[in-house]
Length: 286
Image 1 (cartoon, rainbow, N blue to C red):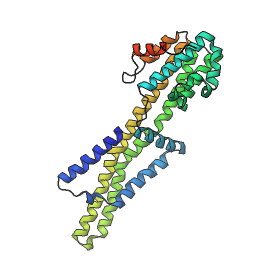
Image 2 (image 1 turned 180 degrees about the vertical axis):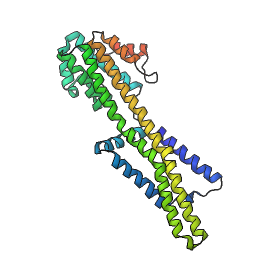
Image 3 (image 1 turned 60 degrees about the horizontal axis):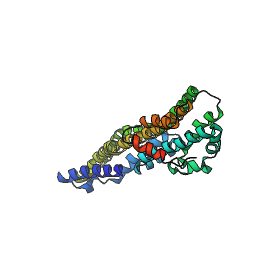
Image 4 (image 1 turned 90 degrees about the horizontal axis):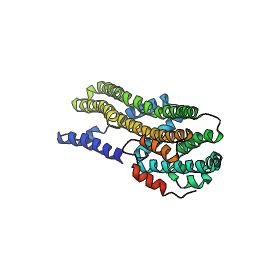
């Protein structure tokens, strides 16, 4: 929602200021310039991106427009889920976790937390982290290194759409110049048609330069930055999971392991200590 509001502010401020200065917004509507600039920008994106990255760009843009980033409730849910899992392991032995981790869709614990169960990446990261704990085949320190390696890979993959969007944003002013040069070429061909026709074509050429800069700095680069913030929120979510599981594997009590993870969170998404502790103690004992 905020992206839409920001985009409206950009549009209204630009066109509004132009009209206040006496301009007619209709003169900015040159279809040929839109076709050249947006078409070339789309071509740059396709040339620079493997197929799976294009799909990821579309997915990231949809999430950004929908405001989909984990908030305090999602972090609270994952901490409560991990606490319940840890308590089962503490009371019944680590082998008791196997039925929950191997088939989380059928686990009564996971079923209570849809924000985790319905999010493939978060669910997979939790299960991948808990499986070595159940097997007991690696040491706690090695588990943390293993989860760090997986987290680093996911972080690098999430940055690919940002790099491509930044490339497109940085290219757009130059694409605008290309459109303007094409417009000037048309202007030279129309000199014999009189000053009015020449003026119209010069205006179209200048609109191309304007459009390239406007789309780059008004929309594409800010969108790339918003996706970067969303990625950081997703990364923080996985780091929170890693902190809790690594702490539990090292022998921390379930409540302590969850508290360590809670303290790793930014203040805007961090559940309150007393509030979370009360919520954990209110969970049904298993």
